[in-house]
Picture 1 (cartoon, rainbow, N blue to C red):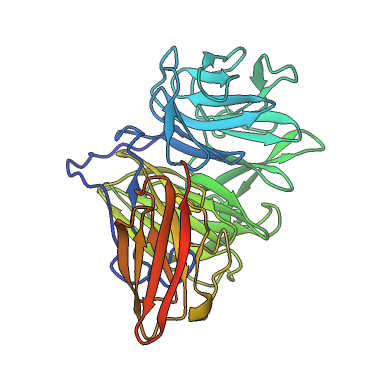
Picture 2 (tube, rainbow, N blue to C red):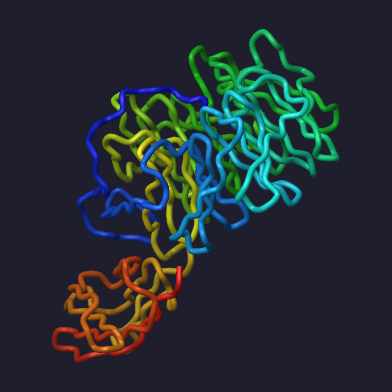
Length: 420
């Protein structure tokens, strides 16, 4: 559990809002953000959240929580033995799951995360923090012993530190496998280690091309054109496989620890601050580097350990459990403007959130949803031509809707709420 500890807030709340209207498929500062607490996960430290092959895994101090395919139901694994002080990362590799246990070592699961066994044979040190797979080999970056490599048989770990200086370069905070190379962020001087596949050596590089005292890289994300590094001094981007880096600070505040993830269209970054709160930022993947980050929301009283995207939702692992919010329909289906006569609800079936696509943004209207017995289940006023509706609290089954447009007649249809 390589973290910076702050005084935990005693306040407790389940949701956070940014007060304005939804305007696009992904989160923006103009979106009204509604956060859902994932109540089947403990409301204590969740140190990691990972999307591995389309399945979500959340990690606590010594236990993993596995989600169903919708991300609405979670099952707890057995306790790790020996118990670590925190599980910072999870990886899927050759039919197994691997977990880092800070203070102890590596654990593995052969039953999709239900049970775990200690598997640190050959590992130097007891502080693994992040996994990365490259060309059929699994690596783990550590806080105290550089990088370790799993052997081909999957039975033991060994040091993989050719080119690293033990005196200054063995403390890693992050590692990523990109299209071109393996890159690690280490130390506190803006130091990067880039693996040369041909020689098997690590080349030392720096953000900005020089030592930057105090600069720490905490997370990486790769998009189509760039490798992104998230630090305690905002974000950096590289368009040449990590050879050079451009500072991309506009719109983002410098904090302590930052984490990030990406959807098909946007990057999301969470920046932590010393008074125990997080500011969430976003930017379009296709935006020029000169474009500023957009502040999406402030999570007062929350410290963010990690971000992940799945099932149209952004998940945030915090010291008060796991929360999530819908990122909008653009990830699963392009936003559409639909004439009133062609009013649709999508995706259908669904079990989380749907879009009411209509042509009533100017004139307004009313939407009503009833169960098979005719009992009202939901109702709301239409204020947008692509309005979001949260149906996550409805029981599975078939529902019937009526859209009444002011001066425009009615449209009727059926909505199927699926099983979690």
